[in-house]
Image (tube, helix red, strand yellow):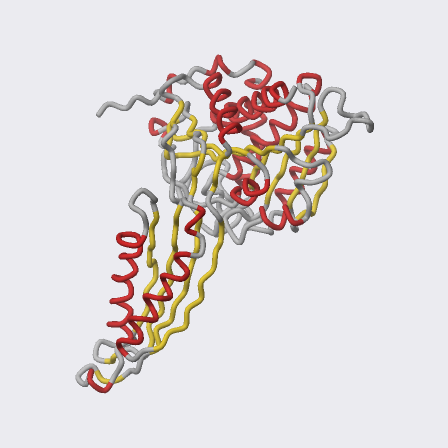
Length: 413
């Protein structure tokens, strides 16, 4: 089948206003500096210092040290400086700042200078786009009539910085009415935007389980409770949850990613340890997998005379986009990228994102900005040690954010 997506080499950049296109060299410079100094979650001190330095330079009001390393910048549009304004309209823009514990394999001038840490998911680009948006809006405050909060969030990759930032009050004083955010996405080519109402990304839950059997000699299984056999049956049975307990219309997945047992071929293992991830879109399934997983583990263990130790927890809820804000983003994206091929509504992924916590609090939209360019060898998947993206997407991201701001406040009046 021939792809209907735009060719990255022929993306129409004339849709990006000249004043934003002129920012592209700075966007690249900022992104590459951030890429050279990647930091893990809640350790983004250099990143936060750089962001704060730029905001100070541009005289943008901001608060630092929120949820350890988070920053919130506030930009007031036309007529918003007056203290007499009651209940001003506020739109938030969120960008994550953290990197991953991955050794970078790219041989580029801006390669990570921190051993074993890498921006392998595009968060350096997200931060650069947010900075570019802040700079532009500060210079063009007369072009919108509300207040914009730009949230620079730590620790998206886990344990999650969104929830502690919310608990610290970033959506208050003034109260945020809606929120938008983007993810540079190498699963889509440059010149495309993935946006849809409803579920975009999955909830993620996790569990660790230790099967407690009775070890012994491999030649005398009748004297043992074989934890490997028990674990194997549990792994197989867990797959029936999605196949037979979840409505086929609802997508879900249970993946056992780790299984460790035994020390020698002729010794029946006393214990077996497994770790797994659970993903789903439908919020009504919250609590269901926890209960069903334990039922299956308990039943199989009882039938074999084994015991178990189960630890189950929820990490992030699903990313659910508001219909109206998703339509706002889609309408703006159509102005920036070539249509109709440039808009990708069926862009769901079972990956998870803690932007979901913001979307539980206020209506909003999280969307994907295509950033892959195979012709430049910029199409490695996220979390790969050779991940990189086409930096042309940076100016496109700023353009989309700026237009969303302008259009949102017009629609509020």
